[in-house]
Image 1: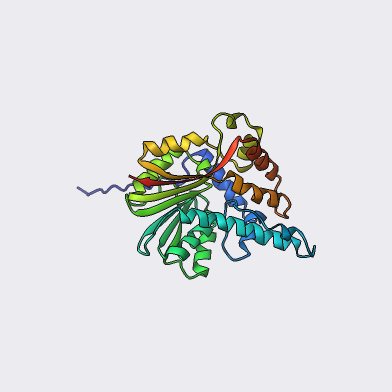
Image 2: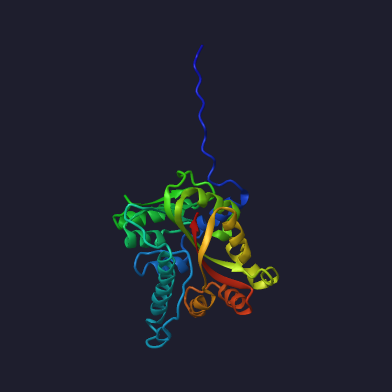
Length: 289
């Protein structure tokens, strides 16, 4: 009798219609000037916002170079945000491994390797972003240590306890945080560090805010209330050890972006939501226990 063998097929990366819609959004926004023009400054391409006061002098002087000055300043602010996130990872040894969950075009992953010298894996459901980020790693000749994968952050396929640190940088609004933190808790070894930077709604007023709803609609996302993060972390052995409200620190970025050549019209919604207190910009660092 012939011997039969069975194989287990890997689950699809895009598991729901919503995930397919999110992936299509990012796959079709390949030429978005907000990310590309800023990344062209130094080859670090981000998919997040910035923190810190901007230099008002960029708005003055020769009008022929004004737009370039603003672009450089916006990029400085978004890079400062990534540096702030990496600061909260703590001491990372060169032989450690880090996970960038929702890695975009790879800017923060490349910065992490540059700082720590460690291995970094990024995952995203956008095939375009995977190709772009891997090309950026190859251009910097670090593709043997920094790699990007077409995988779902809710089911990465990586080994249990295989990462010393992980982060999500403005990506949690695309997923169920309870499911996400179950996966990140599995991936982190005991004592490992998770850092989250995200926009989140005020539990009392955020759900009724037209500005928050406008942000959701613009980015095809689902902004979570602030409390959802702490409930999900507690359920999965992630203990917050540092919580920083970055709302005041990010407002200058949006004020400058509203005056920039890459303004998209969503700036007013962010400034309104932050100003009325219905929306917060939060950093949470948590340890896996």
